[in-house]
Length: 184
Image 1: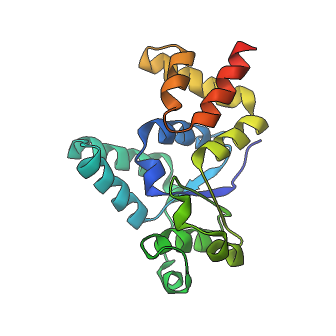
Image 2 (image 1 turned 90 degrees about the vertical axis):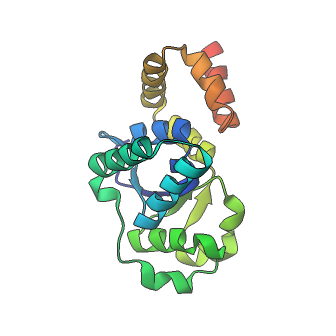
Image 3 (image 1 turned 30 degrees about the vertical axis):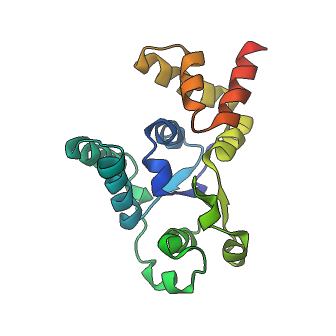
């Protein structure tokens, strides 16, 4: 599958380097989906990286620059007029507005409670946990997903199994499924 299916990556997903790294590799050409975000999502990602995760400002800035370079079509603008129409959690209304404006049907977030079905359904948008979307991508393109994971493990200087165990802290069902596949 090679697609231009738009998916909004929430700041909490982008700030989680292990999960974001895999998702972004799967979005590189030939991509499985097209990641989208807004300036506000990117600013929130940077704040989280610097203030909570203690990244240096230069590394956080480098991450932002690389996102913009690798995915210039990912930046969504002009959605602000939709924010007041959104009824999900007030601090995440900009994320839903970004999805609506970009015609993304999926928002990937660890904060599912901020995106209730009642607020999203009228817009034809669903919120998914990153592991659920990764499982979907694995079901569609298992070799591609495993290839990308193998590349990450190699760059980290660890085995694929060790990388999956580490990734399991954030996406446990995805990690367990792929470890089962490797052991069968």
